[in-house]
Length: 232
Image 1 (cartoon, rainbow, N blue to C red):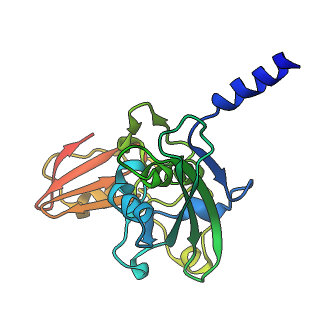
Image 2: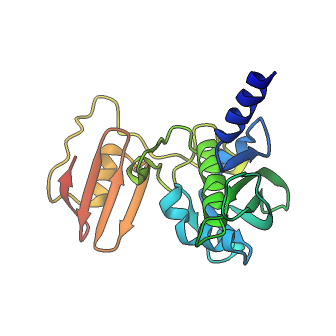
């Protein structure tokens, strides 16, 4: 009996200090369409999430709800930690709900973290919540030991593979394809109109002012002042 009790105590002490609880077992497919988020809330968790959204996830931060695909509402409360040997037994419990523009909640999650000597643990709990949302929205992007590799994030304006086309979008003509059998030769100095005549409209256009990028499935063409300066 003593051995069993000792094993139970050791198992409890080995539990992680922080914990995450996902709001749903099945991920709503609408999560995959979210790129820009407005973070709601004035608590520590919301503040930390706003400061680090682009560092911790592939999402971008909106200044107001009208600019966002969805709103992430953070709530926070303190409770007594279950850690036996903790100097500070306070614990932060952070919850968040992702709401669509029509007001429907389609993702939720919560995390808890023991307070440290100089922090409440709310920031770490908020990061756990965002990491889980990141994993549900961008499962193909891996979060490594040093954090998120932003280079692996999809284009902010690129549609997801699962995103269905609306009736209005289906009615719009897609990028024009070059004639069959025509040689696809892009030369330095060509204009955007000449490139579009050969390759058709780009899948993604990135306008950086003086520099414009046309991204196709297997090629990226760079323009400066309307003329091709690089092809890769």
